[in-house]
Every structure is written in C-alpha cells, then in structure tokens.
Length: 204
Image (tube, rainbow, N blue to C red):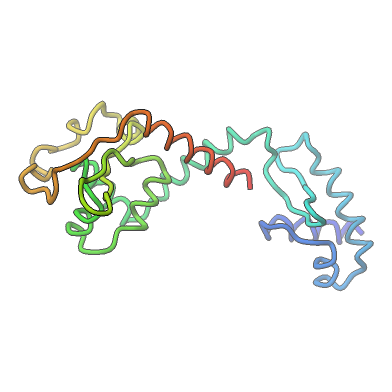
C-alpha cells in the first residue's frame, strides 16, 4: 500500500491537473477502492496546514498550492514571469520604453514582424500599459512602460534610460500623433479588472 501511495503522490505532483480515482485505478491496474484508500492517506499528509494540499472537486483529485500562501506565491510567480521574457518580448519592451505612446503597428514596422504575442506578454507581466487611443477607425491602442518597469530599472522616468534622446523616435517621425489620453479612472478600473482575472487564474 505504501508503494501505491507514493505512486499516486508522484502522479498527482507531475500531472498538474485533476484526475479521478477511476482513471488512476485503470491506469495503474489496481482496484479503485485501493486508490481511494491511498488518496485518503495522502489527504492526511497534505492537510490544510501544509503549503501544498490535496483537494477533491466533483470526484477529481489534485495537488494545489494552499490558498493561505497565495500572495507570497503570486509575488514569486510574477517575478519569475518577468525574468523569463523572450528575446522578442525584450526587443519589444525596449522599443516601447524608448518610444512612449507607440502603437503596435509602429512596433511592427520597426521590428518587421508581428508583435501580438510580445505585447500581450508584456501587458501580462505589468511592464507596459495602454495609455491612449488613437483617433482613427478601430481606435488602436498606444503603449508606454509602467512604473513597475521604471522601478525594475532603478530609474525615475524613461528619459533616464541610456542615450534616450538619440535612440527615441522623433515626434515628426511617429506615424500618428492624434491621441486621446486614457483617464486615471479608466486605468485604475482596467488594472483592477486585470488583477481579478490574474488572481482567479493563479488560484486555479
């Protein structure tokens, strides 16, 4: 029985999703009752006082992070996300940092490739934000770096970036300069909504 306990524990840890006792039994070619007994033993091991707990939802079992430690875990996850930026995302971030209120179209003109994923990744990491909308059909968004980016670089403003004035695109070179600024209230509402979504995703 101890071997079965360890086997199921290893499966739950590696799987990263919920699984039923029946599926475990069929896969391991053992009785479902034995699987349930092993799971009950694991529940005692991974009880609510531990950092990782074994939960049951609609007859499915999964090893998950204890909700009590959500804030600490989330900080680490967010920091890890930022450290794992792809080359494309880093390149896109540099372009936005040196060219506040730049549109995705302008970014793609500079990079020569589609930048949808890179921009989405940077938004997810909280390193850039939508700061304005162009007065054009479709109201395309304009992006700038966030205060979080500035803090991570140890600077107070983008003008403190190395060789900023020589690298940035001059105003007359920008494709579009007719913007409608987003209000502080709109930014706060959007930030709150994004935070709620991220919290739910992390808890899952």
